[in-house]
Length: 353
Ligand code: SAH
Ligand code: SF4
Image 1 (cartoon, rainbow, N blue to C red):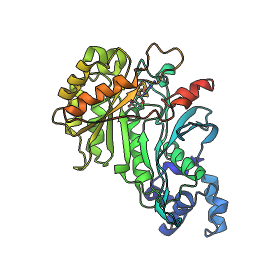
Image 2 (image 1 turned 30 degrees about the horizontal axis):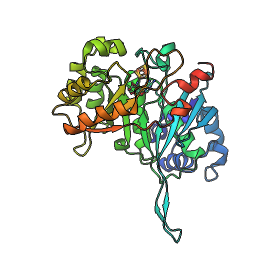
Image 3 (image 1 turned 60 degrees about the horizontal axis):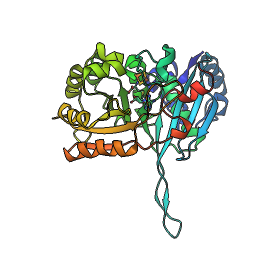
């Protein structure tokens, strides 16, 4: 049996004809959140029976969920082979009504998805790195996280969510399946989530950034930079030995990006390590000439971690320096901190993979 979420509608149409049947099936799956062929009442019975012998639906089983005080919700999913990954639903804006109860604005959501079980990049601050890489997720397992969460929260088809590939794993170490997930999610017959609503976050695999650029998918890029000199970056992120800062920055400069958009640089502030004003100044220099926005993240401590979280005051000083030099910069709110939202932390508490 294969996961039907692994396929683009064009691929399904090689197996299922005529074409309008594929459209009907996609409507059932992506718009009406069906999870069984028996629910597809406008399909002939023999076709339903035939398809149910070939395909299964989302293979995810949610085994734990936790709501944070700031209302983000973290899910722990079990895959068919028993391995586990996490996803997070981040409410970005509440819905708004006027005095008569007329809706003025819809609620907005971002969904953070995992791309691998574990990760082999080995960053010293990251819990996901601990067990190494177990395996890549298939495109369908990535799509399934979004579909499951949209269904669970009754987020209607028409409400597009933003996707960030910032959960467990290094998306560009699983480029083929992640690119396919982007294409499936953005297809008009599925969820129609534009690539411009999808951000791929990477620890800086320069070669794959180039490959992703050549695919011209139209996705947004986020770079986890975290340090401004190679010595420190290699300490924090061993992947820097293979792709140093200069090579990452060069790959970003060549990456095709929508004129109206920017490349996001994530900078994890770790107390006393990379959070000094000299570091901020050097960051300004590095980003010179790039349409960048910086997202400062306060290190989220976990059991056994050797690093400390810096004070918000320090983070604001860092931010002020960047802003004073004209670099757009935000401090990531501690969304989900009380439910340990940094990658890998819910899974770790539940006893690992
Ligand atoms: N592998 C990709 C995407 C997943 S990690 C990447 O590294 O970009 C998503 C983000 O979570 C990264 O910016 C990462 O640095 C950050 N992160 C990892 N551990 C963290 C921790 N303990 N506290 C805060 N952020 C963390
Ligand atoms: Fe992998 Fe990203 Fe964690 Fe580094 S921060 S170990 S690249 S998931």
